[in-house]
Amino acid sequence: MSSKRKLISTLLCVGALTAGLFVSGCGSDKAGGIAYVVSSVVDGGSDEKAAAKLNTLIDATNNFNGDNATWGQNYADSLAKLKGGFAEGAITNQPHFDRLQADLEKAKKEGSTFKEVDAERDNVLNILNELVPVYKDLTAYDDSKAYMNDGGAKGKELAAKYVAAVEKFDAAYAKFNDALNKANTEQTKKQIEK
Image (cartoon, rainbow, N blue to C red; front, side):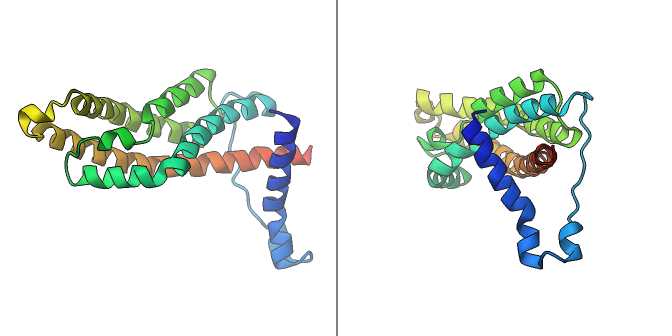
């Protein structure tokens, strides 16, 4: 991580961690009573090793979230079309779940970070293991124009499976992001205290 990125991250985290002081006043007991859920590092390694492993997960989610922020409206419009059944070309405007899956698998191979993060990551991966094949099948069906031969029947079936998997993914991914953010805040606090 570059020193400029570290400085910006530190400043943002310090701002977030001290916001309670500005809102509640310096003498307030509330500011000192901000609770942090302490996660235990699974492999018992150093904070630096845990932070490096956590950064791999953060990079994976940043890449995925960045695409979603850029193309979010297109994704939402296409998903709405798929909720109504098969729509030609709609699957081509969906998030890159396969890239996220590969990045999370890579992070998993690097080792454990925090128990809560690992559990949520594994839950997301389990859902991606269902979602990505349906995504690929629907993409192949669309690309091959097989819907012209069956009137879109298989496409409707695949679209229904895809939409259901995306809804499961969205719920699991939100929990994963929460766990990742909590662990990142904890690591940042530890680094600031050093």
